[in-house]
Length: 142
Image (tube, rainbow, N blue to C red):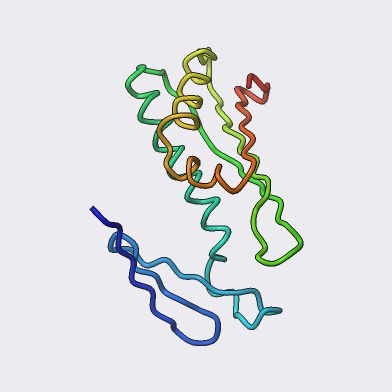
């Protein structure tokens, strides 16, 4: 089944994309003619990584019956200097907080997502170096 997105120009450098029935606003920085009225399109690729992989990880950990935990992902990307400007390196930190969290289950869930299930990472890995780090209670475990 094909994915379909409809994107409408709203003036200036702004666009409104209808994605799965939700509006995603995009705009450029003022220095590039925009009004900062929405996210930058390339940065949305990083958000797509976090959404795709984050949903995988939570789903896998739910199946593993992981106890209560807090989870956040931080992403950082370095761009090329030549056009087309692309992300050549993307770093993803999976950060977990909680009492007595089982390191082996968390690492397994992240690896399953990043190496098998997350289609966004699989696509972007063809163009970028993606580095994965897992932190549990501020200690790096992967």
